[in-house]
Amino acid sequence: MAEAGGTDLTELWSVGRLISISVGKNRVAALVYSMNTQSVGWGEGQDNLFRIEVELLGEVRVGPDGREEFSSGISAYPYLGAIAHRIRAADLMRIFDAGKGSSCVIGKLTQDESIDAAIHIPSMLAKHFAVVGSTGVGKSTAVSLLLHKAISADPKLRVLILDPHNEFAAAFPKHAVVIDTDTLDLPFWLMRLEEFSEVVFRGRPAIPEELDALRDLIPEARRAFRGSDSTLMRRQTEKASVTADTPVPYRMADLLALIDERIGRLEGRQEKPHLRSLKMRIISAINDPRYHFMFSNNTITDTIMETIAKIFRIPGDGKPICTFQLAGIPSEVINSVASVLCRMAFELALWSDGAIHMLVVCEEAHRYIPADPNLGFFPTRQAIARIAKEGRKYGVSLGIITQRPGELDQTILSQCSTLFAMRLANDHDQEIIRSAIPNSSISTTSFLSSIGNGEAIAFGEAIAVPMRMRFSQVERHLLPKASGSVAKTSEDSPDTVDLRTIIGRMRSISGPDLGSLQQNYNAAPMTDIGDDFDDVPVQQTTRYQAEPNPPSIEPYRPDMLPRTAVPQPAVPSQTSIDSKLAELRREFRSDEGGACSLPPRETAPSLRRESGLSLRDSILKKPLSSLYDKD
Image (cartoon, rainbow, N blue to C red; front, side):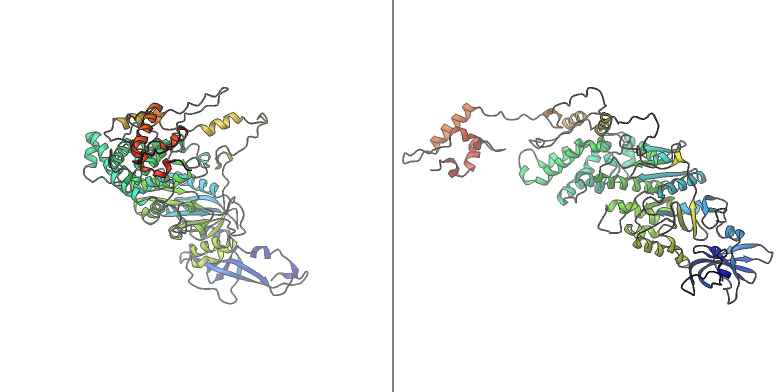
């Protein structure tokens, strides 16, 4: 009751605060989630009665020796007439104390900013965690703070961040290496069949006939490389059969040669259009400068150790975090890259027998593991789901960051034992979080739509009791930000930008060296490739630097194409065509002495020889009516 209309005491009973109810020697902690008065309005100068609804969270027990400790269980519930009062600061500290020596302070309690909000980092990393919240509420800042605390608590931890916005590199200038499109070297032969087909078919569904051909030919190409490689590599791979998914290098020249061998030199070429189409897709991917990170190496070597050591930081060399920037990678390839990284992270932890503790952080996770099973890329979903379900057994953890938990696969979200829920405006997203919170604290989520920026409701195994807290401030120079997104505010900054430099950066994409590929392709034992490359667009670019006089682009040359030197038939001269026409007049002359009237010379291009046929056979294939004048 508020006496004489005073509001001093009512501030202690506001929604979202904890109160204490005395039950004998113990004190029951309760959360206020609803308040109302018996009358319609607030009476000034008179007593006002108000009703408070609370949710019981646990109790502070007093032991026989006088020692007090908090327990989430309640031994004796409050009775009618029990005194409810403001909770003690000492009780708040007991309630929200993680109770373990390796706890880390990540912020302050919203109810009492003098009390630290602490979590148990090993418990958070033992399974998985998630940070959810709408755009602009501070998710990335909270994640950077949690990762700083994690690598401080566990120096052996290795962190891989899938960064679609290229913003986490600024948050870890001293603890992370950055892998972008310029420094990325992810060989194509590390991909499994489904991942490689996602690249070849540019994100569209694979054609079954072409996929079956890849499934048969890639193992042969891998075996061809294994036979030409060192004895050590042969001993390592001879124990198991080589399949299309075995991470053994192979050469594109060998794969193309095997496709040509199936097409055949002379006969049956028109009966195998799927092989011709498959070859065109592969060559188009090789010539695409956006896929430079896959086909950049001119000489194929077994670099799997170097690739894993760089991406997964083994050894760490003082930089245990790898920020994998995905913004510059083609959208149709991002799924394959994410699948390769997540799959390799799990296999690395699996085959190291738990010696490597790995944390994979997925920003915008709803892109990779959407709630709709028909969306997304199945190998990526499968790789992340395997980490979520089995990763804790082998020492690999998962960090999920998303602004739309309603669009996230609920099976993956249910595996996250620790959850930081920031402000969520969408009702469906709020309902998803309510279903994830333990039943004893459902009312906590009633504040999800109104908490401020930087605030979160944290619950799970790393937190003793669900708590509303505010994350600590991160130093300005350690804030996550997209590369180049922060405008320069210095006084000496020019009013105009150098557009030539911007254009130069847009064009600075280095394509593969087709000369080396052509040399390897010519050296491979293959059959006639005919005119299959004539319609392939070749894109050969060089790294462009902004200069006062930009260099001219090298014109197209047929020798850029990765093809063998096959002699082409000479184009018939006009004299030869005239003699052929005279011969045809004699052949088509009627027995009655009538002469056929052939098309005039200006329409002669319609008699052009078809591929694989002589000029005479080409004309004989045409309807006779097309050879006579139409009167």
